[in-house]
Image (cartoon, rainbow over all chains, first blue to last red; front, side, top):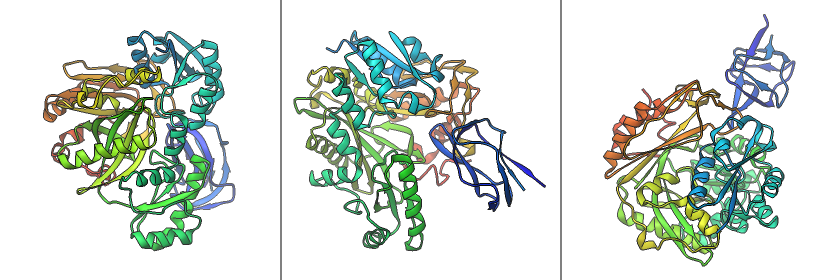
Amino acid sequence: MAEDVKAHITGVVFQITSKAGDVLAAGDPVIVLESMKMEIPVEAPRAGTVREITVAEGQTVQEGDTVAVLD
Amino acid sequence: MLHSVLIANRGEIARRIIRACRALGMRAVAVYSEADASWPHVAEADEAMLIGAAPARDSYLSTERILDAARAAGVAAIHPGYGFLSENWRFAKACEAAGFAFIGPPWQVIQQMGDKIQARWLMAAAGIPVIPGSDGALESIERATEVAERIGYPVMLKAAAGGGGIGMVRVADAAGLPAAFATAQRRAQAAFGSAALFVERYLETPRHIEVQVFGDRDGAVVHLHERECSIQRRHQKLIEESPAPGIDPVLKEQLTAAAVAGARSVGYVNAGTMEFIVQGGEFYFLEMNTRLQVEHPVTEEVTGLDLVAAQLRVASGERLPWRQDEIVQRGAAIECRIYAEDPAKKFMPSPGRITRLVCPHGPGLRLESGVAEGVEVSVHYDPLLAKLITRGSTRAEALSRMEAALAAVVVEGVATVIPFHRRVLRSAAFRDGRVHTQMVEQGGFDG
């Protein structure tokens, strides 16, 4: 079952630290957001394989936006 | 006297500088990004100039755009505030080259003290104690291992070009060094454009005590006493006060003497801060901030002096307005920084629109606020909204005024650290002055 990985905070995509096909453990960073001079990783909610990263570096995301899809 | 000043900053510090300019009859020119058009500092300045898009690199961090604005406005000087370009020696040099007085120390001093390894050498040469560690940048992990073994674990890896606690990594033992070294290099490269690292002994429960200094172009250097700034998260300050509670008078004398000697040895001009870490009766030089600090109002409240006005006077070529024996610390003052962060979620940022803002007034209470109802607190900048400062004839009086002020201030629309401050103020450890820099992260004020 695919699962959306959602931003837990509003920020700008600082770094994309995983790519489609990567196998992640629960808690691994999927992307890193920057908000108010702080770098905040968005972590995989469970173990899985990254199907797709849905954001680009420099893009602004709102809290609750999907940033990646995990298989 | 300088006739006009461009303020290369935003929020509360821009308003503070505008006020000081007014008091001296100088024209104050604000700059702002597209995100800040409705912020109070823009409306309050004599003139305000849009300099770019919301990301700081396109606006408040763009030397070119700020200098263009300064030329267009025809100002005599540029005040960098704190953060942004304030400790960027290339910016200070570019201001001078373009014919504007830079309100701060000479760019060469910013460069020297900004290089943490060089600063350490300079201060050690001036006879000031420095934390045991590497004498220079570490060329390899082998060298890091060697130095760490010599000084003893735990150690701290720091970016040579860094500051503000950014990119530091604590290493508990030899086994953890390789991974920590790689992490610290990566962070240093990302944050400061240089992967150069140095290593220092890590002190477990030190206090952070700093000394405000001020110099003029004739070579006079004075201190304006100390500030205790041990309540921090992520190596950044939340609460500051003066005097440092319970400080031993001998230690205080040593700290202020070292601060003046250090500043004098580098030819310091204008406002600066010598930061020390203190453990037991020992103290070590941490770094020098070559700018006005966020917490300067604490010093203003206990000395009755206007530091920002003095910055403008000294930058105009005037001599220091005070002699050392005229600078007296009276009573006590404390500052709580109001950040848009959620203390219940490990101080995560909380951007958003401020929907309601109620500011308290009262004796001994000062509010330095950058915000107003309706403004959007952007993801692009530091989360500092405002600073509450109280003073009293005693520390107890300053603290009780702060408790009352924290209970009365209302900020809605974003989370703030006010609930954290109220817990700290109630805690026995803080009331007794038993503080150290690790307390917040060790959960010392939770529950």
